[in-house]
Image 1: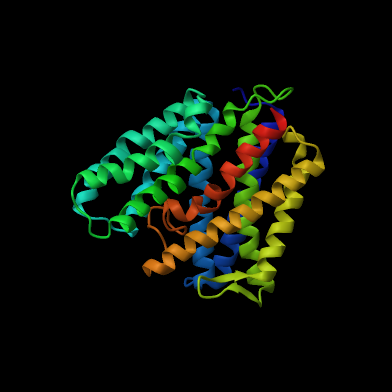
Image 2: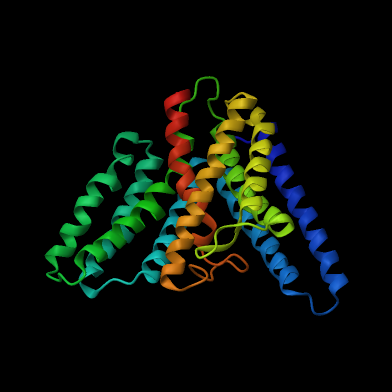
Length: 312
C-alpha cells in the first residue's frame, strides 16, 4: 500500500493542525508565565501525546496492512489489560485470562491479517463466548461466576473484537478503490477522534446543559451537537479521499460521531462504576489506551459492516 497524493494531503493536514495547536499552546504558556493553569497544562500534555500517537500511527500506516494489524493488536492487548485490571477477577479465571491475552487476541488479529472474514467475524462472539465460561467452570470456582465470565467476555468483545475492525478496513475489496484502503482507515480514525476533540471544545465554550451528569459530567448537549455536526461537516469535506460521494461521507461521518459518543459514554459508565477517572496512565494527558479508543470501539464494527454491505 503506497502513499498517494490524497493520503499525503490528509497526513499533511493533520500535522499542520497539530503544529498550530503546539504554537497556540506555547503562546498560552508564555502568557500564563511560569505557572500555567490546569486547563493550559492539560492542553499541553494532550498535544504532546497526540504528536506521539500520530507518529506511531503514521509509521504503522506507512508499513501497510501488517503494520496496522500489529499496532491495533498491541492496542487491544493493553486495553484488555486495563479493562481486566479495572474489573478484577478471581484466581479461578487465570487460565481463562491466559487464553484471552495470548491465544484469542493474537488469533483474532492473525485472521484479520489473513483477510479471513468468515472466521474473523465470529471467532470472539461465538467461539470465545462459549469457551470463556467453559474454561472458567473447569477451574471449579463458582463464586460470582456469571459476573466474572461476563467481565472477560465483555472485555474481549470491546477491546479486541470491536477494535480489530479498524485494521480490517484494509481487507475490504471496494470496486474502483483498490489499494487505497489506507485512506479509508485514516478517514475513519480522523472523523471519530476529531469529533471527540470538537465535542470537548464546543462543550468548554458553550456547554450549559449536561447530558449525563452522573456518568460524564463534562459532556453537554451543546458540546455534543457542536462536535457531531462539525465533525460530520469535516467528514463530508473529505469525501475525495473515500469511495463515497460527499453526502455519503457526511452520513457515514454523522453515524461515526454518534457511535463514538455512545462508546465514550458507556466506557465512562464503567469507570464511574469502578470509582476511577481513567482506565490507566500510559498516555500522558489522555489516561490509558482504553480512554483513547473507547469511541473507536463502538464505531469500528458498525462502519466496517456497513461499508462492506453497501460498497463491496
